[in-house]
Length: 363
Length: 277
Image 1 (cartoon, one colour):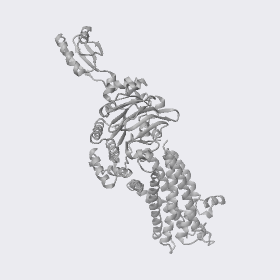
Image 2: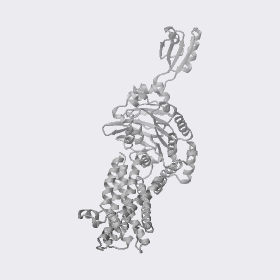
Image 3: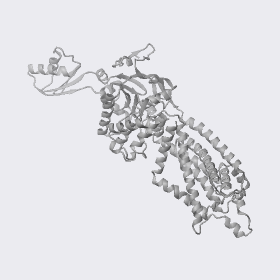
Image 4: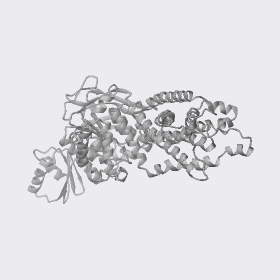
């Protein structure tokens, strides 16, 4: 456990108990305890994961395809039974009380589930009736939601005339019609272009601001996790290998990198920096005429460095600051870059990243 | 539960009537059968050529001619095919993720097959009505045989007919919808349904008079659910028990038992298929 515990220092009170499980935090709406899903053929899609999500939080599962993200969501949304462990959503066990769980949650699945042969509004009306939203209330909410996702003008057109991004937005608004307390978003922006992705992020952030809804999302885009999530769990091969705020995850990777271009970089210059008070130098190297310096916080360190360079009459040609990225964090935790994974998944996990996997996981 | 079921029935029907091709098929497919098969396959002529003057009604289950005989059988045929398409449509819903949306929704699982059976029944009953009206209208067209109702055919007989067809439609839809939920591969489903459809159709007295069948086939036909339905309906349409295999009451009992069995089997299969694993 020591490795995992090291990274459990997020915003909420996280306490590991003696058995390596976790003591429930106050107001946790999702509690997952040693959850496990082994598919036939000994494919461990979810391998004893434990975590909790607090009310009002945007919690993200970040990991490559086939890491176990969708399987976890599938268990939490009562579509799949776990083979081990326990999961509660809104205080209800997902295995024993699926109908109570279903009432309080919304799901925007990875694949499109809207009906192409109906209009956008009809899809919404159907969803409202499936969730027993009273007619007059549904009418009001549908207008609001269509406005939220900017589909008012195309609401009465058949969905088959919609673009992929419009369909995805319609899915999102369908997931909100019954005002769920927990919204599950499985890869909400998969396959969308940059503009649509950005607007999807806006919608999700707006939801967070305007409601106290808890959002559980999965993604394999680092920028997405970074832009949206309060906390991120990095999941790989069915295991949660790190769990923290985006900032915390980046911090574990190390500080900012400052690149200073000078006429000639030598040990003397690095000595200048090392000798400066108030600067904790993590690492310093010279590459060509550039000094690469790693510091905990570039905002305060850089002015000091530049001042001391000036006083020593060292000319500075350019300065570049590189903030630590989740990319680096992911690399640090998994030993691989996230983007490598798509072409390199292990055979046992490959099922879930191929087109066949789409069908498999639904079972 | 009723609200969700009605909403899903409405969804199925919208998908149906909004597709022009579907509407055209509703009219043209039975028209083809009635025009080509029903008119051409006029086996009553054989007896006339023979000149023995036998009572054709004995062969045609009380119908005065082959066309009237097969037009009634055609309605059962329609029930079979409409149910078949409903089974296929639920497999498509699984493929397109719509089924998983329903499985996440807080609705009783039974709503999923029940709404599909109900929408299937609405479609098939409408189509059967179209068949009857088309077949009857042929009487007005010179050179064509038409469905000749008995003059005493009234509202009670029509209701009886509807009941026969509805029981058949419910039983078949229950079976095919359950198969559509269990089978996850469309080729397998098509194959399976074909395997069921063909013998169901051709070992019954829907299109071929039982009297013309060899003994072994006749035995099979006498227990075919479609035989119960067309046998009962012909007695209602032609107001005679000449050429009937069973009494109307026994026919009704037969199809009722079949429908009940299929609902039971369908429930077991659908439950299995919708259970989480």
